[in-house]
Length: 209
Image (cartoon, rainbow, N blue to C red; front, side, top):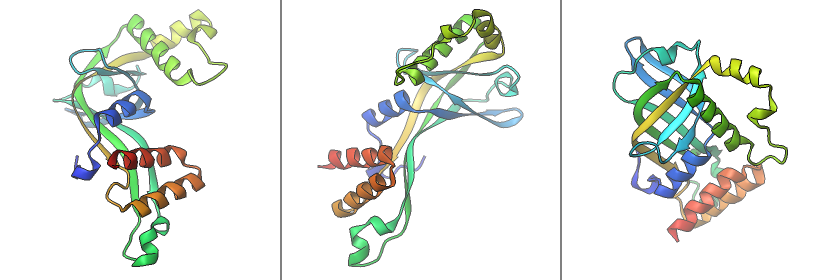
């Protein structure tokens, strides 16, 4: 990944991304060529030496049946958004501005392990459910569904674990812009309703002060 110094993600950026990301793209090189599947993962920092991403995929998906050649990679994404030059104070000063895209992302590399084990998969399903239902007052639980139904659903999937070996992460959040332009980006994103991106730009700006 190309990471200019000003866009280097901090350890806290990476931790925040791994804990709170949505789905990620699992990519492997196989004898059949490149394979990619979008999956939700839960991050387990205590698995192995560097943590792991845990998830599951459909049993009928041939991706898991094709052994990867070398490392696998998961592309994990945080907030991303278009930035219009109309938000920059410098537009009115000299006009030498262009559009860009702000984003936070990590390329998580590791060894892919398949778990064809109902108990392992059941644990991951519960952890994923708890992660994404935790903000709801009427949070859904796996136990809300009939046990026989859940058992059948678990038979239809296999577990996947990406045992992390290294991470390359980038947080491109207008850090290369003057303070007045950054404030304009925050105001513009907030007015557009993209508070997640606005908060990310604000946090990056605060670290520079």
